[in-house]
Figure 1 (tube, rainbow, N blue to C red):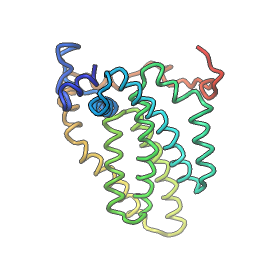
Figure 2 (cartoon, one colour):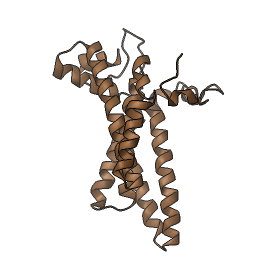
Figure 3 (spheres, one colour):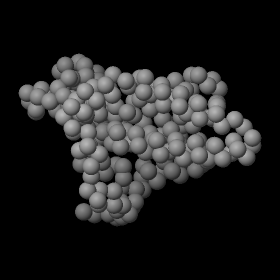
Length: 234
């Protein structure tokens, strides 16, 4: 339905409309807008375009895993192994396709790219200004694609910042410039997505719905380790 709103309206909808509930549209929309564009370009029915877009995202998750692993280890071989594990061994994230988790799948496809761009910007890899802008843009894309995966990105970048900060202290490099670049990446992401955050605030704060977004059952994050292999059956 969200993709149909984009396809028919040609823009970000303000509400879900009378077909669902006439309430503000505050759902992350990166996947739906992408699927809508593919629907326009291909001429396929929306349900077919959705499935194909999700399958492409699944492939991109494996490719982006290679990018992240190769960047962290400095070894392309390690990246290839990681790509093979994600793409051909573990049940996740391909299982997302079978239960409509296309939004999180697309977020995971963006996660590694956004993380690598943020790492390069924080470590002052030239050209610094362009890398800060690109990292902010990629993070902004993740903001409007999946909120939970955005938290994963924050954890990745936070861990990287800690490691780099320790290295800077040992090597007697400036900590201020390191953290300044990190804040600039966050500031650029906020600037790119400010209209969306304003919409979220105006829709959620008056209704008191923000607290419900943050609530979850105690077992919500319980790890199911069997999902690490293809033998898992429900």
